[in-house]
Length: 243
Image (cartoon, rainbow, N blue to C red; front, top):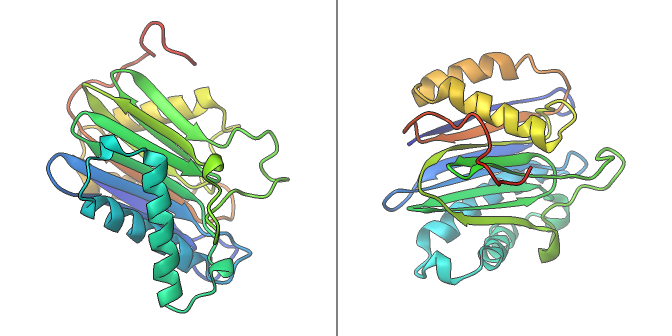
């Protein structure tokens, strides 16, 4: 499994408020987390970093079968760890708001969660599945995010089995891909995996950094990737799958 990420500071703030994490744990298991701190909050960068750490800490130390507990409940556990971590560091939770993109691959199952802007996409023999904010006017609405109280119903969940895992990517909304429609995001994901499926993590990071740094817009830009490199990426959605 090849994994990593790239995060480029934008021009809106003096610090990069995005965070990402990709790590293996156990046998044939990997966690990927991407988070975008809300620019209007003083400690949102600390909030985004804390959720990446919290997700890994909770999931990698769970003593239960993840398939016996709903992924929504597991994400709620991560939120509790996030609050405790920030409270222990004496941060005001109200100033630590951040979005959350999570992907967990374990053996023959993939689980993903999204809260807020950005997108996470996963490619298996079942095709490409994308979690993203489908609101029509994303700039005129308040962003869903991690706060002191977690609104569980706003968390979008993907949980499905697979035989072949090809890869996944997650991006904050600083990486604006066309009109952010499902088909566009699927094509972007497929092209990315086809382009980099045979590369090393260092090669991918170097090349992605070169074009992400030139991407239009002034927001922080973060992309994380997880690639299995175990075969040809499907060119089309399997027959009978939904678009």
